[in-house]
Length: 189
Image (cartoon, rainbow, N blue to C red; front, side):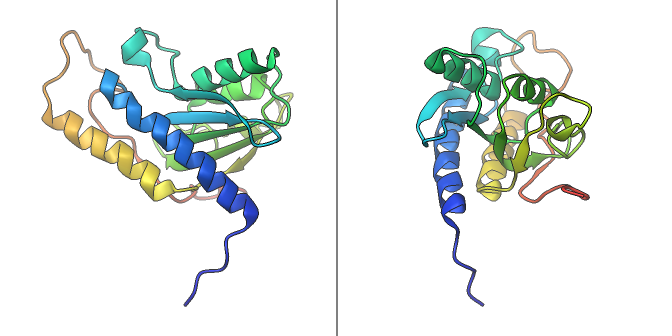
């Protein structure tokens, strides 16, 4: 059975996700988890890029999404990212989802769902929380298998390597995220 033809939006989302995957692929060089993000303007121009840099910068807030949002805001000269789309390889965490809402980003495109810490529908749904002052359209699963594989491969190698000196217990103890290319149960309900 032939697959239905992809829409123009799907093709564009996949092209942007490939840019986010390029960012993610560079993160392990600094010991960071391979998550990448891009912010795209209404005309399709990339306004900001980011990859996880928590290890590289010793900064707990240096998530791919936050870095991409900061760069896009500098590019536009405004913290309001109206009309922009944030494309990220893994479902945003609560901190990043909060930053997305505060930046007034109207659309998020994500690759893999994060069943352990996702805040776009898996564990929490900060992006579409009706009690907040801004809501975000979420499209998930774009190149989801490829995004999940990058993370799973990283953590498989991480578990075989000795822990970094001074590394303590916590969410980066070598356990892979529970990620999947498909939406969580009840997503969009």
